[in-house]
Length: 533
Image 1 (tube, rainbow, N blue to C red):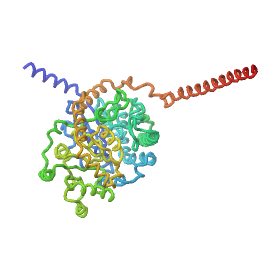
Image 2: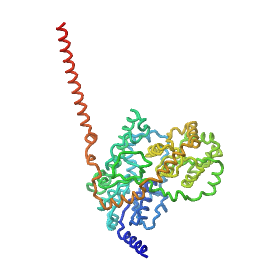
Image 3: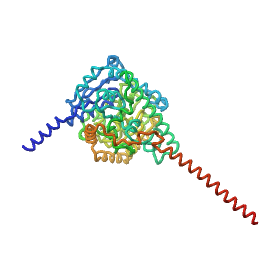
Image 4: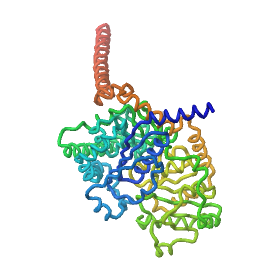
C-alpha cells in the first residue's frame, strides 16, 4: 500500500512539474520530420507537456500517424499558398544520380542558399508577420522551445516569443553550428568526399579537405544568412545575427552516435542523441513479413535488399547505372535481389533475370531483421544507416548526395560495410565482385555484429542522454561556461597563426645571423692561417 501511495505521489509530482515544451517541426523533408516527431514522442512519453508546431514549406503527404503519443498537441500551420503546394508533384532529384555539376562544391556554395532557402521563404515570411499565431503561442507560456538548425525560423520564433530555445539537428553534424558550440576544426578527423582518412591521407587528400570544407561552410553560412535576411525583412526591424542566436543555448543536440560516428574533438555542449529513433525492443520483435516476401526468401539461401530511399528514385536511375546492376543480377544467379523500384515498369522487368523482384514498397525493418537477408544496398541516408547498423547487417553504401558520402564512410570504417562510388555503378564487373565479397566473406557480417554489440551496450542510452540534457538545459538556460572562450576570436588567434609566423620569422633571422657569424669566424680563421703560412 505504501509503495502504491509513493508511486502515485511520484506520478503526481511528475505531472505537476512537467515542463511546457514547444517543438518546431518544419515540414520540408521527411527524414527531418520523422526525427523531430520521434523526439517529440520520447519527450511526451517521459511526462512532459509537448506542443508540436508544424509550419508547412512542402505538402508532404505521408505524415499520418507519424506522431504516436496522443497527448501531444499538434498545431499545423498552413500558409496561404498551401493549395498551390498540394498541386505540386512530390519533388525528386534525378540530376543527383549522375550530374557532376550537382556535386560540385563551388556551384553548391552559390546555389544552395537561394535554392533551399527559397523553399522556406514564403511560409517563413507569413509566419513572422502573423501576429495572431505569435500571440496564440505566447499565451501558452512555454518553458522552453526546441528547434532544428537546418531551418532557422523556429529559433527566431522562440526569440520573438521570449522563450529559451534548444537547437537540434536531424543529421550527424553541420559544421558551422558545431563550431559555434566550441568544436574545433575536424580536419583529419573526418573524411571529405574523395579524400582518404588519416593516416593514409596524403597531401592531395588534405588539399581536397580544405577545398571542400571551405565551400561547404560557405554554402551553409550563406543559407543561414539568407534566412536571417528574410526574417529580418519580414519582422521590419533588426534581429539577432543567426550565429549569436543559436549559440545562446546551453546545449546543441545532434543526431550523432559517438560509437558509430567518427571520433572528433568536441565539447560538453554538443550532445549526441543519435539512436533515439531506434527501438531495440521493436527491432527484436518486428512485424511478420507478408506472405509474398516469405515466398521470395525461400527461393535461395541468400537475399540482397536494394533501396535508395524516398527522395532519390530507383526508376530515375540512368540507364548505364541500371545496366551495371543487371550485370550483377545475371552474374549472381544463386542470389535473390529485392529491389525497391517505385513504379510498375513491365518493359524494364523483361530485362531482368528471374532472381530479381521489383517492389514499389518494402517492409525494410522486417527484411533487415531477417537472417536470410545477407546484404543491404543503400544510399546511405542517416535513417537507413542507423537501421542497418542496429541490425548487424553488412551493407553496400552507394551515397548519392548531401550527408550520404560521410554517412557511408562513417559506417564503412567499422568494417561491416563498403562505401562505393555511385559512378562505379556502371562497372558491372567491379560491382559484382564487391557484392559477391560482401555476401560470401564472413568478415563483413562479423564486423557488423561487433558494431551492433557495441551500440546495444553503449554506456549511456541515447534516450536517457536526451532527457537528462533537456532537463539540464531547462534548469540552466543561460549557462555558457562550457563554450570555450577562444571561440570568440578569429582563426589567427584561435590557431596561434600569429605566434607560428613570429616563431618562423625569429627562427629564420636567428639562422641567418648564426650563419653570418659562422661565416665571419671561419673567414678570420682562414685569413690568420694564410698569414701564418
